[in-house]
Length: 105
Image (cartoon, rainbow, N blue to C red; front, side, top):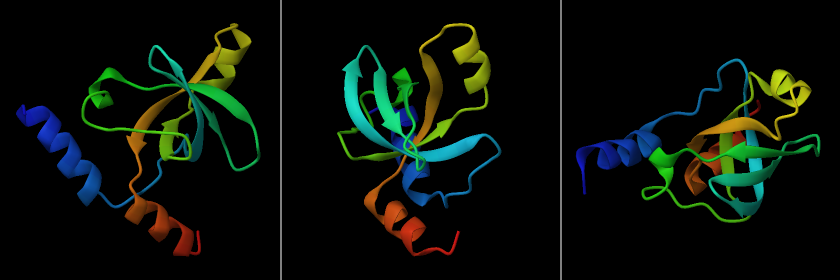
């Protein structure tokens, strides 16, 4: 295993989840292929997200998984006619999801 993938996994597990401006937690609805996934947010809005190549062989997702997406350019993308509205920035593990559910935020 290359050092980059190992460090990516270590950083994802050890990192405490702090959402930046323009980031949100979404649940995976379906895998569309070609690095595209369909996600749903807390309000029930569905959108397409790009799953970057750096996660492909190191992080696995399936239906029902939770991910942190960067949707800072969502409005511009939808206005220009692009169907992909956001980019996955982090895959959440079970422990991180449980911590988020228990937190008052």
